[in-house]
Length: 125
Image 1 (cartoon, rainbow, N blue to C red):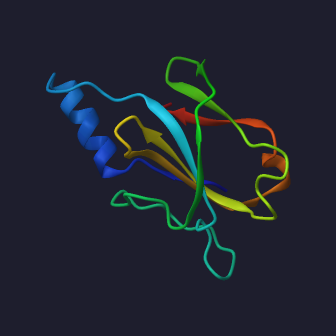
Image 2: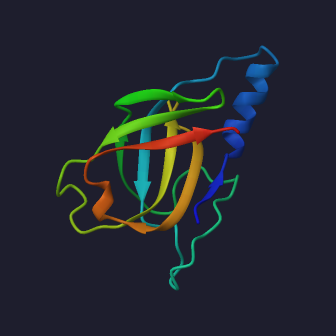
């Protein structure tokens, strides 16, 4: 099962926006990595103190954004066939326009089902 965390930097930005002290930057990229599991293959819990993925492999620009109900959005990205070059992905993060992590998700390694257009869901329900 996937494990998700909202980093402290994102929480700080949300608190500032609620106080009218700042605006929230848009989500513009998605980072992909293979550091979401330990040596035994156990999915790790992302920590709110994280400022980067455990082992980032690459980033993709967000191709599309679609609402999911009233409390979430799907962020689309495209990975070209063969772009993973045999790597498996086990962690992803939404990256805001200021370059900070907005959300982190860790899960069992995936490879074959990522060669296409997919979505990362940011859901507050």
